Length: 107
Length: 115
Image (tube, rainbow over all chains, first blue to last red; front, side):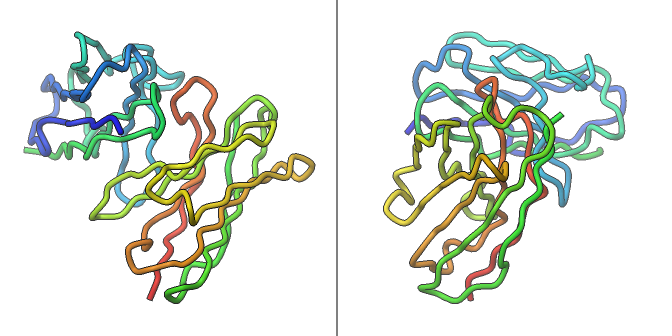
């Protein structure tokens, strides 16, 4: 199975900050990567698919990029509602797999 | 917009069978692949398997021998069964739709405890 390694595992930031989360795939997956946001007690919500396509309804301060097998989620100008846990997920190969998550909390 | 509503038993004993159903409203039932995913503190998010509109299934090999996913298109529902449960199967179980490769809509989740 393809392993996805996220870094950092946790992050503290302030409202207005720019934040970057990285997801590294154990082998090539093309652009078949998604990012999700999960708030406590809720199901994950899709933010970005195909590595860089913003899902409808997701705020434009979220963006995604890819360099080889490294993927990045960037949040510009953090808002209070962005403090949550973020997961990457690959859908290039079965079994579909997820990163272990990055918890973003308020500094 | 697709909405998913899950139901099923939340407290089971070891060796019993988990049975969950996900009802779909909105959207086109035949356009999506339908998935089950679970989340536990120890294992994080784990994809269990999927079923296509035509009934073809793919399962995670970690559970393959114990899992069955089925669908009833007439009722716009799909279901998950996991047999021979152990404490390691304790998790929140989600159903999710898949249209663009990613999981675009999720159910509310059901906490399943095996004890």
